[in-house]
Amino acid sequence: MTTAAAGWPAQHAAAGSARRGAALFLTAPASETLFRAGQAGSDSFAAAQDGITQTGLHGRGLLRSAAIAVPVADAAAISGTRAVAPLSRLLQADLLVVAPTSLPRGTAARIGRLTGVVAAQPVDAARIQVNGKYVAMLGVDPSAFRGFAARPTARSTSLWQDVADGGIAVSYTMGKQDRLPLGGSVKVAGARTEKLRVGGFGTVGIAGVDAVVSDSVARSLGIPAGNAIVISAPRAGLTSLMARVSRLLPRRAAIAPLVAQAVSTGVAVTSGAAGAAGVTVADGPGLSRAEVAKFLTAAVSTVGLPYVWGAAGPRAFDCSGLVQWSLAQAGVVMPRVAVDQAQAGPQIPVSQLQPGDLLFYHTDPTAPTYISHVAIYLGNGQMIQAPEPGMDVEVVPAIVSGPGFAGAVQVYPRVAAAVAANLAG
Image (cartoon, rainbow, N blue to C red; front, side):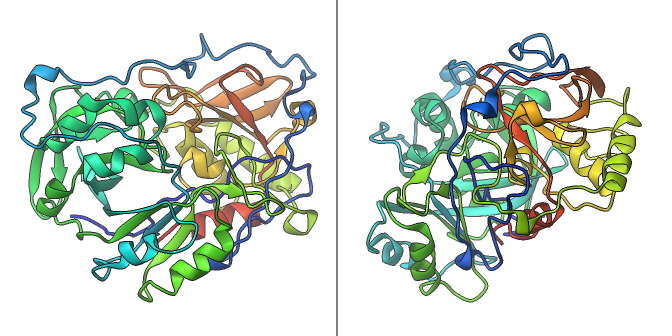
């Protein structure tokens, strides 16, 4: 079965740095959200104290996010019956609209005519089962949509051609860590159950989206046609634009930003750094001592339990599932995926790390600026993480520098709960 726009994931803020005490970067409804991007101070990645490891991600079950070819299935199996147009340009995905049912005809065209909008691409969106696990899926016109994907994924014509031919592309993390068969098939359960060929592992770069199919396949799976729109407006003031877009939408549609934006300039900020933008002390406090104690006690109790992609406890975990479950034991609500957890509070310099802070990483070579791994800082230069399939939850030296390190965040429960509650749809 599909669940259109139910808990649909969307990234709400991105780069920026804020010292302890800074916080709320969003309010509900999304159309009233105002984002501020702070200046990333040089101390954000300063040499840490207390013996924290100053190394890359190699050797810890994490892949450094170097640019590599997107893994794709054997091109000989691609029929090319629905030809995919060459990539003409890369488009920044700035806003996401999601509704529980199909949007009125012409909505995307009307949004596309708004001042500041470069492109407004209709897509189909739902949470749907892939091999028994619910994932966020988009149904797209591969030729029209590919420019919105992360650069390496957008450039992979073979991946998009396979999608056009009826296959499924999954995120790099899902493909690799759920050990899906590249070129093989997965069972997708919608209005009917289908077996789809896995055409490639390529991350779109929209938070939480782990699968992409063609719009025709989405229809056969029962996903509402055209119930979502991805909007590119890199030079527009997003707060004002969201208000104008909202006036064109039916009541039950939701809209959320996919980037942070500097209020003083109105320029969008890339989404590759951890930390909620524009947070202030009024939006604290951080975790109390009692909450930290319960959080870390719960986390450490999982050492030795297996990594399973998509698992969130209590007997198996992936990286963000470990964070969400452990904080839940302390009564703290967190969003589910790492890229949204990275917006659960202000970014802090590693020299000020305290037990209970979160560490974030870029580990996805198909979307090098996308946050795809999280660990929990324990203190004394140690962190706990659920690393990858075949490994168990482990305590290892904390990694707080190098090209794969995205930053450290102090959890603000009010901010974390707001992120979890304000996902589009």
